[in-house]
Length: 461
Ligand code: 2HG
Ligand code: ZN
Image 1 (cartoon, protein in one colour):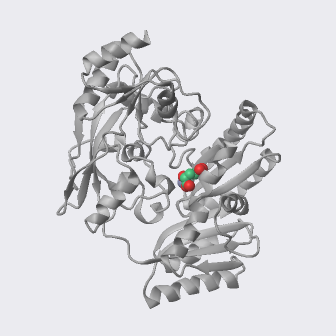
Image 2: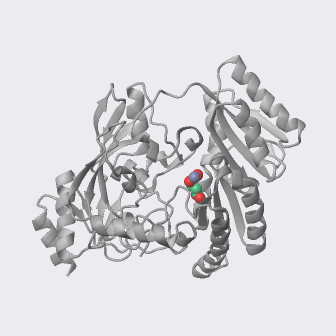
Image 3: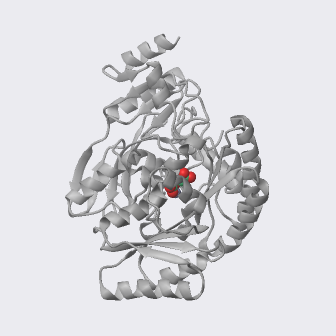
């Protein structure tokens, strides 16, 4: 059966590169979530938009489900193929197609890595400012599919702000050229924005035109030690009032413990319960004085117990490593991840509520908190103890996620801030989206993917 399907695909798309070795099925069938056993039918590696269209048309004839695949660094199971789907890897479509100096745009294929986009922009004296730790392996197509955020959202916004246009092959194989990099376009629904964060359920992004901006001004990085969770928002306000913040991130001593165990350098002699790493525009006397004023205000009020400011790019990178190395340092524990958001104004109350909730719910599990506090986005990683069975661990975590989802619903927050819903959070979509909204989402999907072949089971059933 399998072979005859692949033969028919090969006939329908002559020259299409296919992989079906067990190691490839394993490699391309999963993302950074480690909960599902990969079991794809095969891997297709198209080299052109026409090939993608031909694969989608073939899939409609044969009723084969498709899983679009980029760098597979996702944390919500959005790129998992565990049910005999055909994975469409975009890794061969990874080129820069055009740079336009007047429009300040870069047109790229979806398989290009975020870091390669950064490099291409900087070769032209410009910047693509969306950034996060997986930059070396994640792809722009995946960034678009999840509306990826990261460490500079506080200054530059999410991926959505930087997509000037995109081309989509829909679930029927139609090619849509959406927005064509126009700045002003008041001609009806902006379908481009429907595609962003749709997690591959409406079609496959086959090209994107990215907006670029001026390179960032010189900046400094500061690491602060905090005595308690409660003062986080005061520290944030003290810095935001005085400085142009490029990032404002936090993590706990447990996070630091794991990053240090992975080779990072210890920042302070003493142990502190909480840390903030912030980056801000600097380089002139006024901003340096403002940074010192913010720091002193925090020290005088007892909101901060220690601090260090980077004196060189190397030291800035060292401080960033303490925050950016967290996910990798926890990977071996197969953490259960929550990626939640609330409005910044709701953050203090939400922090107090969730801290109490999780303290009660997980007395026996290690919980690691970190995240983009300046965007109202918390990452809560629950680590699996060695002696607990994985299915039982997930079951217990899901029970607590249910309580978390209820808290989020009460304060109007989101069960997924930047990682997407995928398989991991689809059971909780209703905490963030009303029934009416979900019905509209299903209707849109029905139009663009009438046979339900595009990444089925992700986002909603
Ligand atoms: C980050 O902010 C990423 O480092 C990953 O979004 C978060 O591992 C996580 O939970
Ligand atoms: Zn994050």
